[in-house]
Image (cartoon, rainbow, N blue to C red; front, side):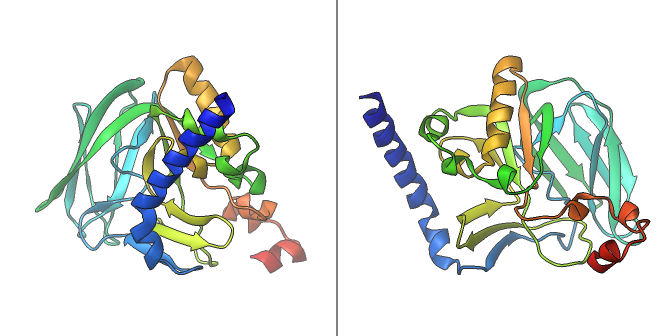
Length: 257
């Protein structure tokens, strides 16, 4: 009876998710992306790591960065702390706020420029984990054996998840877009967004990373942020800092560079 009930609930959640995503799915072509927010905006903007719904690392300096007009003064305010910076000739700016303790109370962050201002909402302070590795980390929760109960019980308002888009190419990138993607293996996925963990979206989260984060959260009750940068089939060189690779004088490494 329990298994039957779980199956029915999973079907309901799956149908609801499919309904809300149907419009977006119809517009996507396999292998193509739909960019919803550009990597770098034309005016005052922040790196797409920083969004409403995010988790910031507790007890460490909080570094926020983005782009604006050259010479523009940018003021960032969060949790009654304020810091300002000036955009350089390349439009980039960066500020650093002091470290703060864990906090489950949603807070706002304001970013003020010379002529424009915007706010990010529902921000928590906790522990941020990077989910990195090959396919064993990339494998989503809904592909793991007997994951039905994990998905159905994934109601954690203080757990957040961000999947960094898998962008191809050999060029160094400063940031990433927020997008929807469709491919033959994972189907349609939402990438480059901070989402609150729920039964609707938990199935697409990296399975091993999610179970690890969920267990920590249940024990500590501290907000958890998961940033998934995993990618199947990658070589060890792709996870090595470029500055280190350039110092390795072998034909194999030079060929990869």
